[in-house]
Image 1 (cartoon, rainbow, N blue to C red):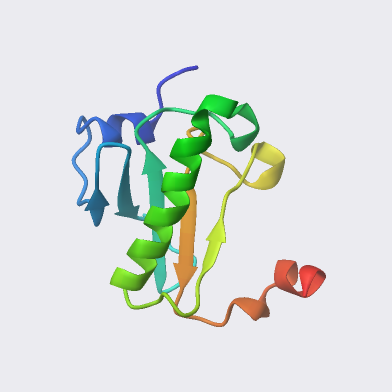
Image 2 (cartoon, one colour):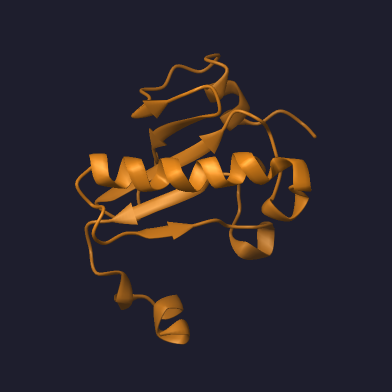
Length: 118
């Protein structure tokens, strides 16, 4: 796997304001927000795509979900947010380092995707 901007951010090679940080992940604001609240939960361990995760990554994946809930609460959006993981180019992934999007602050039912799965 080639290095990505998220790898450089998690290692501190690219300065970034962390909203949250622990030994497993960091959380930053998205530079191209799609909602009033749009932050990224990025694991320090580089996994290119969700489908590339292995059974030994189960604990890390669970940790990322717990952090997403904590951060959403800390940001005051814990009662209503969307959590998104894009997988692969066809799924909208542009940086091939697994990350979770927390989106909130606007009605999430207004987009085409929500209508398909309502």
